[in-house]
Image (cartoon, rainbow, N blue to C red; front, side, top):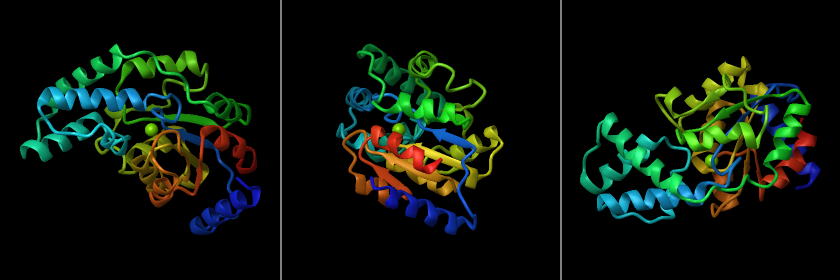
Length: 242
Ligand code: MG
């Protein structure tokens, strides 16, 4: 992406927020599809769960629910197919089954460019906060080995920390509170439309990378300040932004 395009987007963000210049103190970072290439396995395990429950679903539709909590996704499926919503404990039981399907699948690679992105934040002294709708422990546990030192354990928002998941701004607002930063001091890094919507609504500068089948336009429409065709491209642009 052209430097000029990046500069203009940041200027637009500053005008919208009434600030002179953007000086990020914290980066709020999504996990699935942003740091690890896990979405193919997530969509496959959701589809397997739907099949087991006799619920008609299309595997690709689960890309659109990315960012929602597991409970929210399960409620959506039941509402649509059966006309009612299971309670929290039923949802958690079904989510555990979905998580077990995920765990049976091969370990997924890190998204290319993500390590460089994290290294830049660490080098520039920008606080990193993980903000994920996931409770998949196998993924949360591997962050320490994939990104050593990048995500302090006390700076993580997961599905269990929020009452309203993405696209509601609550997850990112809670991430800002953990970092002790104002919205206009923060940048959100996302890959999915619902996550971008959440980041945009939280008031942070929202950067999106298309790392799967979701088109760039969908990320722009969801409210991203800048959309990149890959995490590599986003990492390249970071220099001009911070
Ligand atoms: Mg994601």
